Length: 407
Image 1 (cartoon, rainbow, N blue to C red):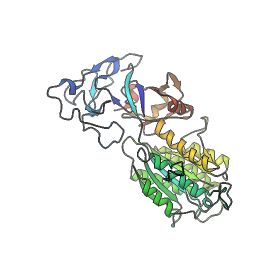
Image 2 (spheres, rainbow, N blue to C red):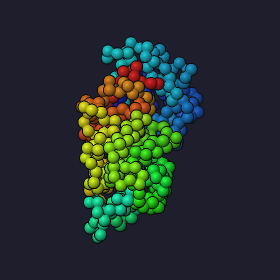
Image 3 (cartoon, rainbow, N blue to C red):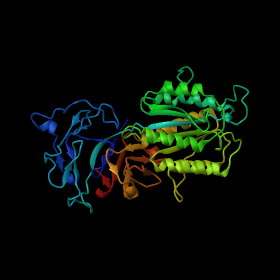
Image 4 (cartoon, rainbow, N blue to C red):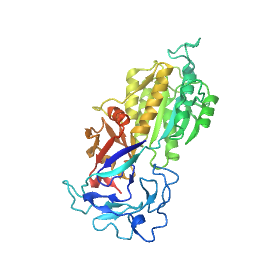
């Protein structure tokens, strides 16, 4: 799905400028591919504008809206003129010296882009503790009307049987998400069983889940830390926002412990905060109804970087198979639809000073939208996310001071 995106300043929210680029002050820069004889060698090469795509354009070129490599400038060619500089992908951007309009240097009128969905990197962090062998009321399942939590979640993730719908969320979306999976605890508690993140990763994930049934305790803090470490050692492709989807059915504890302590809970919340500080959002899905509501909300808030005074993050709870499938689709669908990847970078400390509008309605920072700590992705939240997904031709407009943009 493409979103029509109207962008101000030279921040490219995702996405690809048309062959004739309109920059700040209404200035246009003609395509060298269309006007230079002979045209540069890579002109008209087929490309994919999606962030992190394998068939992108070579250095000095960007992928235009028609799926062809294009450029309007070279680094030493002077095509951009005064007050503009040529970027490494062949676009002219303000260099901060222009007098501009709109009350600040290099203020820009509307610049039109095609906004591409992100291809997120989602690590499924699955609690496989012994209680996952119980039903949703946390008692031993005895009949067909009392499905167990673990096989129900397994089905909601990787079901491929078209005669027994719905298909699993990984089955449906494996071509558009870098899915990986980690299950905890492992045989050497508090370790994890895992398979690396990749596109079209259904079989390895399905095999991993099938090989490791419910057993053990719930060392959630250590499991989060292990996934964060893996993201740091094996970072996602460029433009792919990292996400942890934590599904758990109980309060955290230590290896071999049968109960939880306040320190266990504090450690888990701090692990989620540490993940967010590294640019990794954590979404919480509680499977069943045996978890403390206050801890659940605090963990959900920590995973989304919510601080005191801001509206609570959504904590997803599933108390039956239908709710579980819906929650998984809502979380992953929201990441796919409502993350707007930046091809430029914003100083994350300046995010709250930006202005984002959706369909001409101004959105509130922290409530309706946030900026990743790495300054590379805008996330629409809550009602704003719902509005974006429900709009046939949504228009997103974002304004940042030129000084906030990191070229």
